[in-house]
Length: 117
View (cartoon, rainbow, N blue to C red):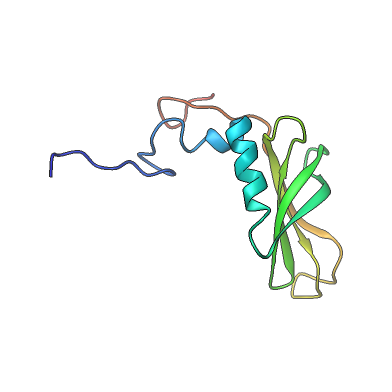
């Protein structure tokens, strides 16, 4: 071994830029989202709204009566947020409502934990 280690894609020690690359958009990112929509069990939701009220297109997967949606800006493919929608009655309640919603307001790359982008 030459003393180098592979850096993880996420979490502490992640390679700078890798963990944030999907949030920044671009053609490569857009291609990844389109590919994800081709995975069996994954659907596209044409109109999904994040916690900040922004409308986008979502890549979604349903599991155990809940649909998790990753919401993207239509023109830039930038991640806007995510939400969870009940599609079947379960412990959260009756089918229909959004039970969790998150908006990504800002993101960026920093040199140290705790720094603002």
